Image (cartoon, protein in one colour):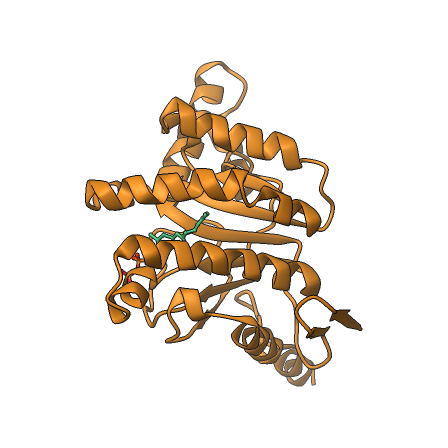
Length: 258
Ligand code: FPP
């Protein structure tokens, strides 16, 4: 299936590669990108935001349905005040000024994270962005904002404990699905693939529960430079992965039956 895109002359041909339905991306390396250019860190974040638009366009055209990006963690508040302020300003700008571009691409915006703990003006931006875009059909951009995987699990457990307290649930009836169904966005499928640019090899508290069986793909490129070619390479490599979910590969399963 070739999906030509006249605007940026890219070919979204899925032959030889596998496109995940649900993809996670840890957008890392903005600070190093800026430092290399003797620019302030905020300039790196701005370049990162520009690149997020590009990623959305490319993922949407490839047929990804859910793209979850790590924008701001529950731990990022300890950064210098001016960097946090610049990031918050950038988020507001992204979800307001850039929204027509997302609309043009048919991209729905949702948030995952402890949104209720954000200052009211940021909560408003999140709720308005979700409401405005809720009927867009092509892809969901899920922004992990004030997000921490451990906090998400803790809050899921708190909701379950309330159900036990009110007599709606028996402790012995708790299953993995009970935890999954009480996460922030239970309707979003677990990511099949997680991409992390900029050379780090860790999850950094991103989608801890949801990533139990995700494939991981890393590269040394700093986030603002991570483009179409690397995304395509990630999908090409992902096609070669053998996802066994604790079982045997289909080849070994055949051998074992002999
Ligand atoms: C990590 O890189 C990046 C962040 C903490 C912020 C990510 C934010 C963006 C890409 C901006 C756009 C996002 C939205 C949703 C508008 P780092 O600063 O830790 O990089 P470093 O490790 O090189 O210092």
